[in-house]
Image (cartoon, rainbow, N blue to C red; front, top):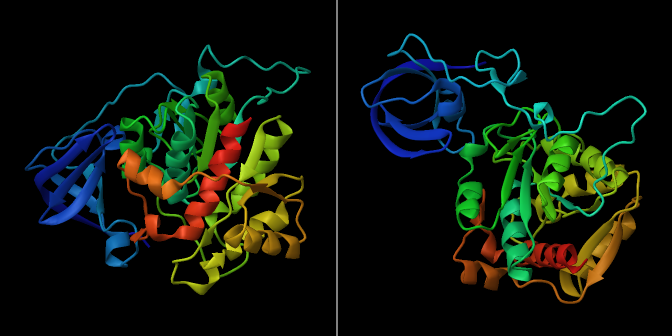
Length: 347
């Protein structure tokens, strides 16, 4: 159950769109300013301390729930779509679907087409960084969107990765979908978010969760299992679609070393053929063998010239971590990301 306590803001260590990082009674916390507004040093606040007290790997921050030093917050906004519905933090957002740029769908009209859009679905937030860096290394002209799902954290401003990659021009557009919020564009669903990205002229959409993916040792108990539906719908709407498998050479957990059992579940549940780019030789051969062993319509496609993602990191001056691991050392994950990025920009 949830745990709350009060405290007083000692300092504000960082402020950017949507979020403030603070210390409260000497402990790190953050405030989502699109939910509770700005806080100031000296303000008395109520914090949700649950994750920190349970020792969960969610960044080690308390979450400011309410600012006791003010009696009212009105953040405005004209939209009528609610995110965080029925929670005390629920908010109205100006959804892309409500805007004049979203074409009204009338009974009997064909569904929107995503033809011309390349969609890469990934299961981890860190893989968004791998792919964005690899795509930019492969092509200076291809525009890339991050379409954030609500499989993990809901506030997009929590992601240091997305903030820094957007500042560097490696991610050109962010779209927050479902109950996630804080993107350049707000959308009600992932397919609608892809439609919005296509309407902005984006070439490649990376679909994935924010930080804080939930996973268990069971076959079905992980948040990114919803990747199956995204892959199916994106393909049905005409997008050129793939999924980047989760494969690690450095993860300490046996179930995620090599071909992750979560990726095996996603591949097994697919109902339509999709290409899975694999590098030639080495890990590519091993991944092909794993896919061949599964009852899956996923089809390995060998990429002879994958992007050198590690060299791209050095050239771009970026770093990507996953649960404290520097992914520049995860040669298998880099190799698969490099093959996926090369495939994405070839057509």
